Structure formats: structure tokens, C-alpha cells
Image (cartoon, rainbow, N blue to C red; front, side):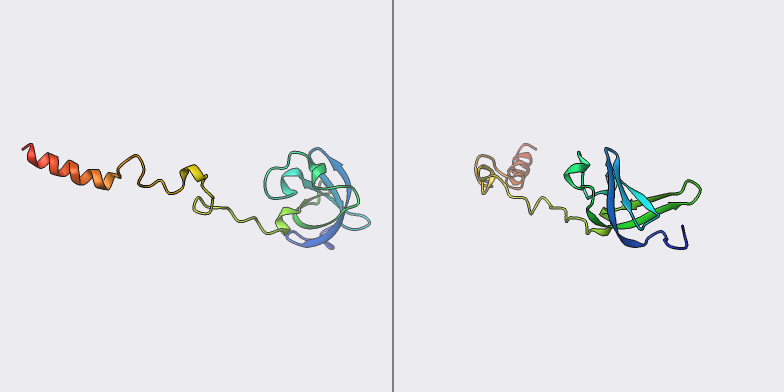
Length: 123
């Protein structure tokens, strides 16, 4: 098996079967591997059938080859770029929270000056 395939190799395969825990992908006429449900895509996959169907052509990366057990572990998500995480700055604030910096409460900076001034008079 290792004469044809090696760990880290990226190949085109075809989905031959789907189970709740993952999908079987044929790499050639003789060899097929398993894409575990956690390796289907970035993020949580509740139902693998929402992402793959039998007969789909997929790009996979070989994660591991176990010659003794004759098993090949594959990943689809390793061939895809991870989605960029949104930072708090990029997230939109609801209209009710926008531009309320001067409404209701004084900032600590403003109050700190008052507190310092008050504490010097009490001595």
C-alpha cells in the first residue's frame, strides 16, 4: 500500500459509502480510506449527509496509513483553508448599544479625578 500512497499526499477520491461516523472514499480501484466525521469540514458536523453523498468526487489528504490493519485515514478539511475567525471589533453591535458612550454613566477616568480631588480635601 505504501508504494502507491504516502502520508501527507493529497488526492482526488470518490465517496463510496456513508456511515454516521464518517465516509468511505475510494482512492483507486483497490484502496479506500475513511474520512472521520470530524475531518469532513471545519466546524461541527451534526449530519454527514448534509455535506457528502455517495458518488461525490472529493479532494482528500492522507493523514495516516496503518499497513497492519490495512486502514487509511483521510481528511477533507485538511485540503481546505480554515475560515477566518471574526474578532469582536468586526462584529456588529446592535443599534441599542451603538454610540452610547456618553449616555447614563461617567467614565472611570472622569470619576477618578473627582475621587482624587475629594480624598485630598478630607486629610
